[in-house]
Structure formats: C-alpha cells, structure tokens
Image 1: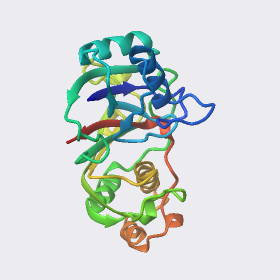
Image 2 (image 1 turned 180 degrees about the vertical axis):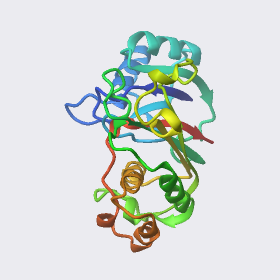
Image 3 (image 1 turned 180 degrees about the horizontal axis):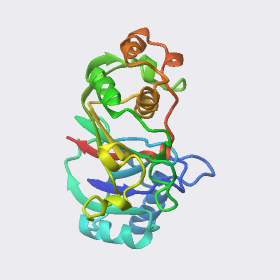
Amino acid sequence: MRNIKLLIEYEGTNYAGWQVQKNLSTIQGTIQEKLKILTGEEIELTSASRTDAGVHALGQVANFNTDSRISSHAIQMGLNALLPDDIVIKSAEDVSLDFDSRRNAKAKTYRYLILNRSYPSAIYRNFSWHVFQKLDIDAMRKAADYLIGKRDFTSFRAAECDALHSVRKILSFSIDITPSFLPFIKRDADELPPFAKGGIGGLMVLEVKGTAFLRHMVRIMVGTLVAIGKGKIKLADFQSIIVAKDRKLAGMTAPPHGLFLKKVEY
C-alpha cells in the first residue's frame, strides 16, 4: 500500500465544488474518475479543503491510498493528460502512510479578489467580485485586524456548517491594492481604472491565513469587510458583531468566484 500526495490547481467555475455529489460534476469526482483509469482501482481522495461551487484553488492538497506500482511522477503526468484543462496536478509524491491532507494541515491561506472600479471585467468575471462603489480600504484594514487571533466566529459561520464548535484562530489578514490584474506590466496612469489613480481602488487582494476555517467563514468575513468599506456597517460596531455571535449582524456572504485556496501548510 502506498500513500500519494497531490498538489492541485483548478478553476472552480464549471464544478459543483470539491466534494463528490450525485449527478453533479465535482473536482474530487473528476480526479477520481481519471485515477481509476490510471490505476484500475476505486480511489477515494482526502483533501485539505472542501471548496464550494465556483471557488478556485492555487494549492489544494489531497492524498489517496493505492496498490498501484505506477510512479508518482507518472501519476502526475497521466492525470494531466486525462484531466480537463481547468484541473492541473502541479506535483505528486509518495508520502508516509499516516499522512492525511486534512488532519495534518497546520494552516491554510485563502485569497479573495475584489475588482473595485465603476465597470466590470469581461475577462476576469469568474475570478473576482466586482464592487462598483468606492471602498474605504483603511476602514477595511482596521476591521481585518480585529479578526486576527483566537475567537469564536459564530457570526461568520454558515447556517449549514456542521463543525462542532466555532472557535478558530486567524494568524494574519492583509488587504492590498494593485491597479491591474497583471501588476508586473507597466501601465500609464491614464490607463488605470477609475479609483486606481491615487492608490484607491483597482484590484483589491485580501489574504487570510488561519489554522482552520468554518464553512463560508472567509466569504462572510469578506462580505462584512466590504459592508464596512461601503459605510453600511460602522467600524465602531464591528467588534460588537464578533462578540455577539449572531450571523444576522454580519455582512452578506461574498460570491464564491472571487475566492482561491492559495496554500496549505503542514
């Protein structure tokens, strides 16, 4: 018996999330189908994160047990030859039999993209949340700082979340601005989108790192921060929302398509 660890990148647009669901196309189900072709075995993947429909991943980690003698490199190459273009195996390696991609994870980093300008993007509509109102990034950053630490995140938990408790630890939360989806390409000031001139607006990149997350927790935090950025929720009231442990007081759940699982640490 062997245990194979996969590092996976995918665009979640065309899938009903990671987890296998009857009669629906999922990331897990698609990879397992291709593994059966390669190994002749019924494979069940364990993943670090069960991403929702429309959510993307830059660094999802999964593992599976197999009796196959196919090398890990051949598994990577074989899967990439069989999988659709929106799922890529970045690496495959043999690991110890006791490795579990979910239970052994020490921290996860999620990235959320917000396009903060007056008009949407035809090209990046599946990878960012378009917010046309100018957002107060300073207020959003101050609010994000309140989320760092060990807290009860009941106010940021989906109603259908099945976690036994709501206490989680946020290690860091940053919010940065770049005027372009391709920040390494030099652009003239006149070409910058509205709000980007003067450093306000453009593409907003939110990154949150924590030891674990509740269902929809990142998206609810983002939705609440956007409400603060719009002035719909006062910064002075934000701490009381955390303490209240009441989902109704927090902001909306941000759309899934702006969210990326960036990295899992072990």
